[in-house]
Amino acid sequence: MQIKRVGVIGGGQLAWMMAPPAQALGIELVIQTPSFDDPAVAIAADTVIAPIDDADATKELARRCDLITFENEFVDLAALFPLAASGVCFRPRLEALSPLLDKYHQRCYLEKLGIPQPEFALPSSPKHIKFPVVLKTRRHGYDGQGTFIIKDSETLQQKLATLHKLSEVLLEEFIPFERELAVMAARSIDGNVMTFPIVETQQENQVCRRAIAPAAISSTVAQEIEAIARTLMTSLQAVGVFGIELFLTQDQKVLVNEIAPRTHNSGHFTIDACVTSQFEQHLRAICDLPLGSSALTCGGAVMVNLLGYEYAQDEYIEKRAQISQVPHARVHWYGKHESRPGRKLGHVTVLIDQFHPEAAQAIAQKIESLWYPQLNK
Ligand code: ADP
Image (cartoon, rainbow, N blue to C red; front, side):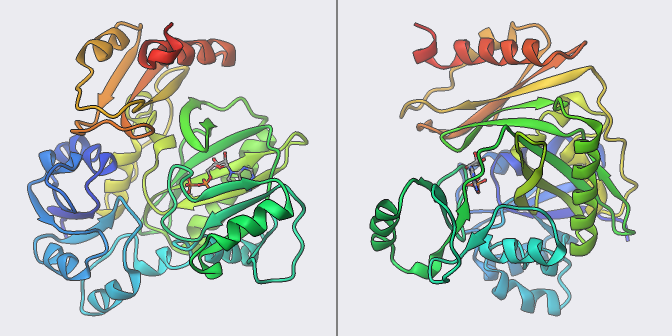
């Protein structure tokens, strides 16, 4: 069947960035999102204004499109299963999301597959994890909200005492990583798995600030990560693009941090720097079109997130113009109506001819000094 209309649950920047490839592929997007102000409303052929986890709204969305995909995983999965049973097509299918939406279930799933990851436990279980530990909310965490690094048992007890329910969190071994890496992986309906170039991601206060492609890693590490991606995508029978975040330790061990069942911030560089972007690849996979090449079209790229640093209603037109002056910089502005500290307002990708990690870092610093007033003094 030729897919003409794709329903997307979630109307943030990830859905917004699907618009150009959707148009090129002759596909219309229908969006389910809570507010008319959300970025993707502007590019949608049709919109269902409703919370992401409103399954009745998703039923309405299904009436208006050929299949449904996700840009946001904070859905009520149990309420979607009856829709799938009644013939609504979800890609990826709901079973591929089931083991991932709860961080504890995700860890258990990775353990079953024998994929290396941090030690983990529920606070109620006797398993001992050495301090510092990382306490995470099991659901609805994003941009490090719901992730706390805890240095000793007293602080842990205090933190646990503030929680509504102990069952909402899990504990993880703190990994003193050398670097954080990420890979975007795509899988087609017929089981073809493709990975994009592996990136180094840099987080501050647990929020992604930059992604540098390609990551300066050995071919052994790269092969290991590609094998992990393949195993995961195949065992989930995933269809579409998934993001996999990883830790690389000093002794070059790779551990999986997290899997996102959708396109991901660490893959934004692919829009400007790869033959096929993660967004086009996702649409290709879910619409049963052949996957495109994921190769870089340049020596490398630096992606810098433009995070809000104040409460304001400002388009930051002058700053965006200044950043656009940086050679080979492409600014992507999500059109959000309000800025608040830490909010992702846009990103910049700078293409590099000949890749050197130090030069990439210097470019990121340059962009950030133009964007953040506190770095500009
Ligand atoms: P979110 O789902 O909110 O993005 P993550 O679980 O990805 O949260 O954590 C955000 C960041 O916190 C990671 O990118 C990493 O920098 C840090 N972090 C998370 N888990 C660990 C861990 N086990 N050890 C060390 N750092 C961690």
